[in-house]
Image 1 (cartoon, rainbow, N blue to C red):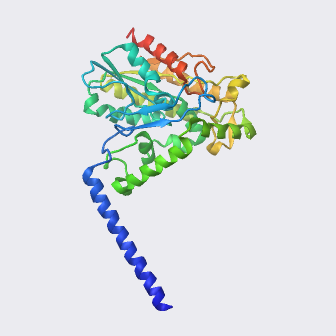
Image 2: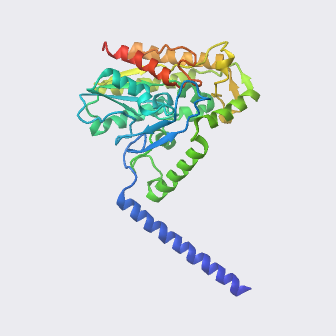
Image 3: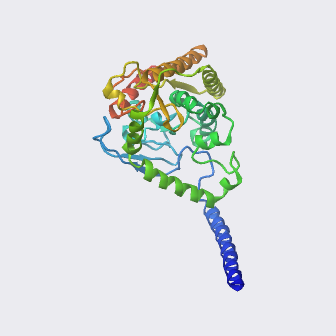
Length: 366
């Protein structure tokens, strides 16, 4: 019995040593070939994926969404090289527009309206708020390929508002390493990363886990949404919002940081308010499309009226700061129907056209 235990321990020991050696060798090989970007990117350069769309359940979207990124990690429809005018767009999921194929996003439609000499780089990243846009404004625009950018569009407010509702502490702490890792899909090894996150082997495992999670839970747009809609039908509906003053002050500070950076670099920054489907007495047909709860783990849901009130506060604060600084702000006005949205605040194909039209009309006179 003793000899058997000793034999097992020896096998475990040598297996452990072999595993460590394999990890070290793998790390050396992966590092040598530099398969992971070592710079600030909001998405993996030269990558792509497909988001499955059930057109029968998603209002105003036809066909699966083909999503791809260029060498800068931007969703774009043309090559940025040798373009006379370059525009960078920052934002959350309503800028990224992952439910829409490349040429149907509002940024792509805007580029086509502006003409052949323009390039609009879409650096939108789902879930990002003004906390992340402050960082992206600083580091994305430092890329040598974007040194001649003159205009930056920033659509924000929705993730600031909902982010604060879900976790005030997390939203207000914009100095954490987690905030950096949420703002960028890839970071330089010397920037706000833990030791393990610098390892190529760790990055490989993390990337594999992320891909498995995406295709298992998010590969079909309607799957997660339907789960949330079922929860919403049974959940407690909350009408009264918590005090938003601290979050609005924080939001204002972030807006001001971006404005100050824009002035330092002589950049034309244009903010865009967050349009939503939310409103008091929302028709049932549209109410059934909502998936935003405002609570962690969707334990309860705020009413459309409450969400509408909060969103108005954030949009008004954005307009106020822009007015005080003589900075351009486009106040989106699009119908609160399925002519524009397929859920709370995400644009369908016709919605993207409406957004691009309003932004184009604004820019053409600038």
